[in-house]
Image (tube, rainbow, N blue to C red; front, side, top):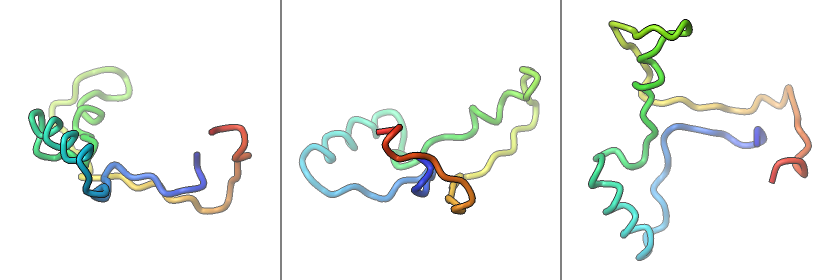
Length: 76
């Protein structure tokens, strides 16, 4: 799980019939179909209270440093 980069933004998938249909369906809800929204995560404080002024990043990227390792056969 942690041997690759993870991001809240995605590269465009291969163009094929299935992906075109999925993209059209997702666009009925949002114009940002290649991202995961972070504003909801930032709207609630650690103590469970609602934040009045929300500040959040446009995207997050998790990059492995090689400092830690996990067995790859445990998580598939």
